[in-house]
Image (cartoon, rainbow, N blue to C red; front, side, top):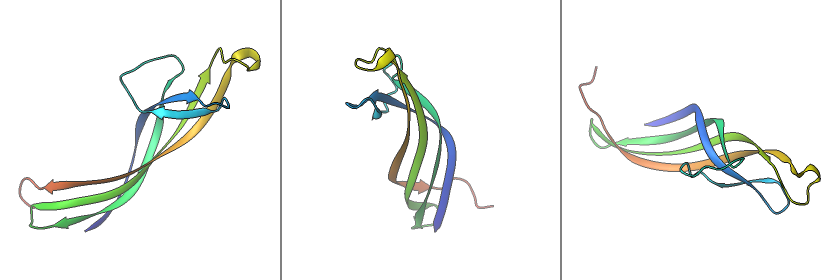
Length: 109
């Protein structure tokens, strides 16, 4: 059974400056904090997949999805930059391939 999926939400990414003073993604570690490093953004995702039912209640699921977020960051005290402030933005795509087991509970209605 093929299906499509879409959604909206928020994600949090760590943003740092690269060697040429442009914003670059580091990681999505939610446990650390720091000024101008972690940015939360409104994101959207879309994708599709396939469910293969072995029985009426048991199936395997595989899907692909792309999550897109636009992050803005401000960095202060940047050496070699007039005024020491760098602002920038970066759109990040997080392409995901997932799989899982589906087990239906209850009765068909």
